[in-house]
Image 1 (cartoon, rainbow, N blue to C red):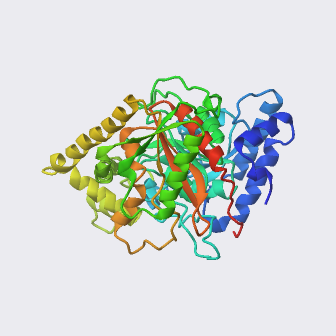
Image 2: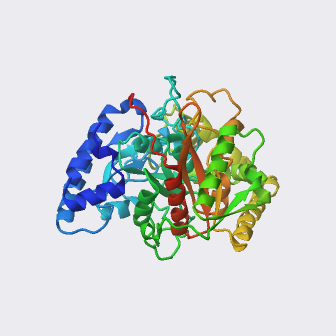
Length: 495
């Protein structure tokens, strides 16, 4: 494996500016690694020609004195982001053949900064899933293994391809999206850093919608510092997105001082789940001690409506999904079913959607349509909206009481095997989001930091939840946790 593809963004930036390496060399090293790693299923649309053209342009910019830290950095892009002229399917058969004539705002900003697109990354279909097993491309695979066991493990979902690619050093970083934990859970499963920004910090324009009031793009990186560097380029106001916040974008990297003395960290009692694995409990306790040793004040807090978060999420998200996915009907773009003689428009809709949507997407669309239907709207959807307000109020109260960040586990377990949950109740899969969905419901920033290994040698992550719009402070606390945990483990190359 090339040492160049193992670099962090910060390391590559310094080497590029010092003239020790070119973006073309860095990009070619990543492309070479990608070609060796098809068994991971991470990259689903490779774009080497685009990458090398962008790298040559980045080299010219760097020679001309370009200052942007993302200039020349090779990235993977989750298949949910529309990329001009490059297939953007949201890992769904219903968008087969869709090559958009436009670019998402987030990727536009990355390319303008001089970043490089290596290709598009695998994911759960329409970002619906916790294991990357609902993709039309097939499974993405975690580069980690359990001890001496060769069983393929999930990289998490929905940003499983992004997590796998970053963990396996196929790219220096990747974009992800997070609707209920889809950046943070796969980051924890693969031993990388995943940041979900405050809702509205990054534009959603040009990102295929799942649940519009919950979706948020963010960086998936090899370190907290890299997340800060990448977020600064991804973030910013976008007039094309009505939910995009018109706020200045600070220098998030400059906020990383390593000093968290005087900060108050809350430990929510409601996150102590019955049946939580002892390894997760210990990791959480160890993380608490690390922050205390770094000078933070630790306080117990209560978020009483947490117990309603999962049911609230699984009413709100499917309701919004059923509305957003109504546009996929075979009329304007994507897949259209073959019709029999005498079939009309209704039959075309029915056959196209039956063929194009996978089982999990169909399940959520049906749930969403049900909770929005006459007679059930008030009983389910309106009630969920009210509970969501109470969940957000819990966080507002804690932050107004002086808490700077909240520490929780990122996931209820380490990565599980692909196929191991195939016969489980779907609700069992939804429990993977138990620690993460509250952050989306409240619109808050959250970050998963790798903090240790379980007894089988698999990575475990801790989650920090921050105040709205204070990603800089959150990143500084996360950097302190990262520094104390000293997580440097990497998966053994088998692919």
